[in-house]
Length: 229
Image (cartoon, rainbow, N blue to C red; front, top):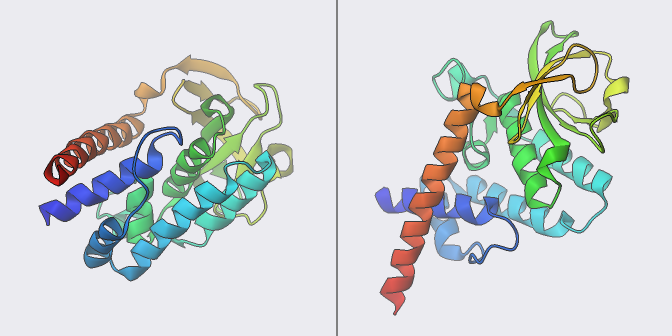
C-alpha cells in the first residue's frame, strides 16, 4: 500500500511539473500500481490526461481551452459530502481523475493545472467563484484573460462551449484567484485585488498537499534510481 502511494505521488509530480522538467515518462509500472489501487479505468484516465497535455501543448490557445474543457467535462459530478465524506474538499487533479469524479471546484482546478502544463501563463488564468443564477447556488469555473481588462473566456463543467464572460449572463462573479493573488468582483471581469490567494484556506491546503506529494515523489524517485545502480 505504501509503495503504491509513493508511485501515485510520483505520477502526480511527473504530470504537474513544467514540461522542461527532467522527469521520466509515465511508465507501465506506475500505471500498474494505479490500476491495482484504483482500477483500470483510473489508469486509462491518467494516460488520456498525459496524452491531452502532450498533444495540445503547441496548439492555438482557444483549441487548448476547448480541448481541456471537453476532456474534464466527461467526468462525473459528485458532491464532496458523497465523494470525500467532507463538506468541502478541493481535490488535486490526480485525485479527481483516479476517483473518477468531483464537484465544480475539482473541475476548475484540474483545468487550471492542465492549462499550466500546456504552457498557458498562470497570470492569465483565474479560478473564479460565481453565483450560478439558473441553479441559484454557488459555483466555480475557470476563466482565461488575454489581458487584465479583457472579457474572459469561461471554462465551465455546466457548459459544452468555452464562451466569453459577456455571453454568460447566468454567472455572477464573486471572487477569483490564482497563484498570484485574490480579487473581489464587483462587476464582470476582474475587480479589486484584496491580497494573496493564501487567504483561501482550501487553496492553501491543496497547495500543501501538492508540495508534500512532490517531495515524497522526489525522494521515492531518487531511491529508485539508487537501487538501479
